[in-house]
Image (cartoon, rainbow, N blue to C red; front, side, top):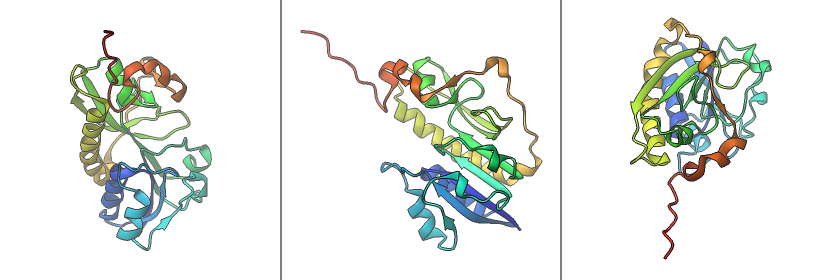
Length: 214
């Protein structure tokens, strides 16, 4: 029997829990919700405690509380911390769902940056976790159209979540048969939280348009 852990937040992480719990010979063992759970989405801790009372919930949000080697599969879904080698090196499969295309949109706020850069395509990616930031080999991805002249960040975020649900449903049952694809490091761009001031009117869910002076 394979034991699994899910780390992260919101409805997408809840869907990952549902998908894992339905896999044959797999048990959802541990859930680590982000320490700060958004009020505008499902609270993962509440969802799991009601749906699976037997599942262990580590409410600190700290991946270091998950004993290395306890779980064969660790799935990070919109998790807000960088996982260190203590867990990476002692987990058979440790993967991440990232709401952006890789390697072009590693790091923080990929939806905001894609719209800021006036991209016509965006994506959501499941990749292997390594010691870098969103730099591990890609397992699966879903690409979809976006329209910078029309879309707000909240529009593309919701679209990412919808495609993410399908991607998780398709990927996890096939995980053992998917061959990871290394990323093209020559095309890699990583955005950090400290860079967010450069996003301008794409820094929030919706654009703030200044009124014309009278």
